Image (cartoon, rainbow, N blue to C red):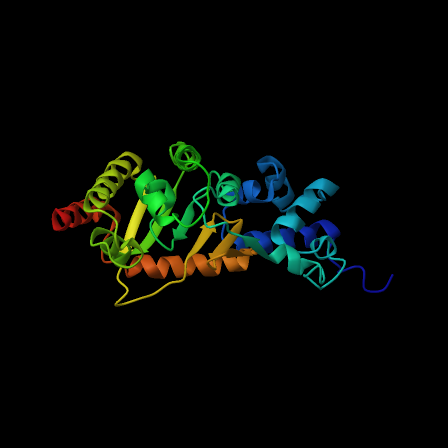
Length: 286
């Protein structure tokens, strides 16, 4: 047939487009295989230059689903990369936040990102670093169950952080800690003894978890950021107060990853300085 002599084979087109989505993800082959839930050796074989192999249907669907592209595009059957209007629900979701420390959805996302770096810009410092007294004070207007429930939720988050492959970066304003230490804003009325106990608890946990846990502090006089969390290469969740705006594309993950990089470049307190910073705050309270 005319024009078929120079037409790339289906396997070659697939290989080119597979490499394209891998490059766009910013992941190496090992990380991409975990992200797309494809066996690492299978992925390597599919990328081999002289391979005429096409993937099995389940592998193809897994890659297309993870990268939010169509199966037809991967196989070279269409030039349209997107999969149609139904992609909107997969790309963007609104999920409720109950305003309690028992946030099963957040823990679920952390588990799904296990083995990848999680990067968060929280509204305040993370709940799993808080004492029970501080948790109860912060959520005193929310019916989140018994104190045992709150402690159990915090313990579940700590258990995830204590796993050997956990890696969490937190970028937070200096003012989040200063307002706690001086009982300003939302912490107005929090007794001094509870504030000191919280800061000492934070120092103890940070010493235990560092460097798997790394905290950076920027100052609001120089920069501001809305709260968000990047769960490895899988999703970004923007905290909206009573809900999360969840974005699931590689492009959004990379966009917010770059924003996180900008924030840590502007950090005035580096991870190795956190203990000294908190110790100084304790001296201001006593």
